Amino acid sequence: MINSKAIHWFRQDLRLTDNPALYEASNHKDILPIYILDDHNSGEFSMGSASRFWLHNSLKDLNQNLNQKLSLYQGNPLEILIDIIDRLNINTVYWNRCYEPWRIKRDTLIKSKLESNGIIVKTFNGSLLWEPWTIKKDDGTPYKVFTPFYRKGCLNSEEPRKPIPKVDISNFIVDNNKTLNLDALSLLPSVRWDIPMKSNWTIGETGAFNRLSEFINSGIEHYKEGRNFPSKPFVSRISPHIHFGELSPNQAWHLAKLKGNNKSIDHFLSELGWREFSYSQLYFNPDLPKKNLQSKFDQFPWEENSHNLKAWQKGQTGVPMVDAGMRELWLTGSMHNRVRMVVGSFLVKNLLLNWHHGERWFWDCLVDADLASNSASWQWVAGCGADAAPYFRIFNPITQGEKFDPDGEYIKQYIPELKDLPNKYLYNPWEAPKEILAEANIVLGKDYPNPIVNLKASREKALEAFKSLKKGN
Image 1: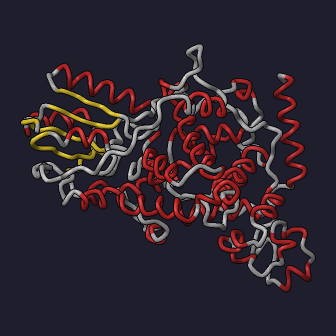
Image 2: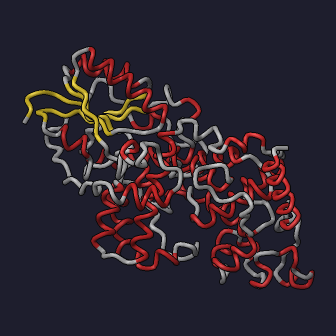
């Protein structure tokens, strides 16, 4: 036991189990666990509405697990930390590292300032399987293609550390003089759209581990193929839990490996690898959220059409597979990964709208809005990122629906106005005869929109735009 007081600064590690910095901090005589809502340094990357809703509930759960000993603050972390250190005679500060560029810049400054004042600062990796700077090619440059990044880089590196036991919180203290009430952080919306959204999730550390365990026990064996079907229970749904650190990727990695080794388990582990690849891209390309990795796309002839953008955002494009995905996002704060590719392709290729519009909308609406994954994924679907889908790969939302929602369960769940339409026309209602629409009580343009673009014509237009890019016109 170290006979001094320490701070553990919670950030994206809202858990008591497998928390490296918290585990080391717990060796001190007294530990002050804190959370600081930092909208001071985050700028345009301040959390979106759905993320703030999740954070409120996650902090509430964490505080309960800490026996109400979590101290909350809001503002500039450097000023807040210095104030706490002076008032409570703290000599060591612990945290788990974050990898967003603005956080790296902030944390580097804080560490330098604190150490210059004689404070010990200890930082750890609590949110990635491998540190971004450790996975490089033989020539020392970062990987630009996923498969060699994961198969050659990650899997040939040191195995991810095994999860650390839960900490004992008996020597935790609270800052009674300055801690805020959770409601004072104003994380919840004034119009309470979050209440029905909350019913889709069990937010917090226990709910996170239960969700992972349920998936490992009943879903992972079917993951490789089943993950493509949005109405089936074969996806993990752990990404928001991992993003906020209610669950670590190490817990997911090692629990999955205990299940054995088959194609589905290997595929699930490789999806954790995709998350690592996204963080590698962000680390080595700090402009990833803003700048095309392939600079030729700087000349791409994007269009501006606020009507089409709004129709896409609200799930009113008249294309059922796209609209179902966008409504799922609106109602649940999440979207099935297969459908994310479909709606992303529709935005940037059929509508020719800049991928930044999609990135920003997802940032506000996703409960798992993660700067690395969100930016890298949008660059991937737009064709301008690392290891990106070729621009001429344009997802057809009709055939995607027919193939991956063959019974129409997904579409009918989120577009109930189409529930009586025969499956033959469920994916393309504009082609249904008038008598079929009448039997289903549908008037296109009234009960459900006509499509805002012609899929075939818009595909051809996108391909022409790409050809002009290749020619440098």
